[in-house]
Image (cartoon, rainbow, N blue to C red; front, side, top):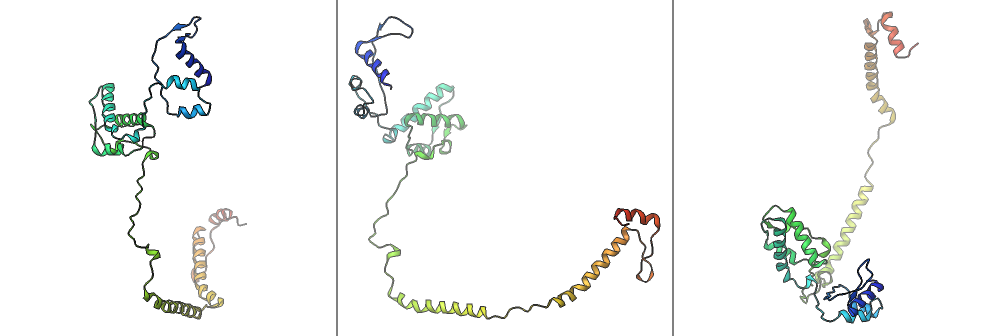
Length: 255
């Protein structure tokens, strides 16, 4: 609250006079003031951010209301209260909450207190089409879940990683070294294995030569069929007729 507003409120409490907005005369009032806050006013008085005289004017009867997470027994009562309000507001039958859903709501921290509980219930009421509200009908943010950390029981035994090794462990060292030597020997044998024989390039070319010739001969035959050539006797191609040859020569760019 700004300092100017604090001074105006203090004047109203002391003199019981107010001036309406746009008015020119003050009017007497007789009211009872109820103030609510979620801040520590005593600490604000020490920090000089709240007027001390206004604090003592307001601090007549103090009612401390703990947060909702510290009074879980009130959650079922509040749930029933809000469900009745929703039924009257929307002119529908009153819905109920299952035990699992009630346990889920009671296990939540509720950082927004009662107002957040009301909004969560209203959201489930509007979106659910069932007469009973189940746990999956409530959308609770992850930030308000209470984590239950359970300390491990003290069994008096040392952890498995720190327990003493048995006496027979000393005889396992030679076998480990033997395994290392066996691995080194296998690697050495793998290194001395002969390399696979590689055929010379000339032999590879000689092996591919018949396949190359066959592909060339097949391509020549396909080219001849495109040019509408008729193969002659003895494996030689007969000359094509001029009307068929000239268009094909122009198509392939042959002059």
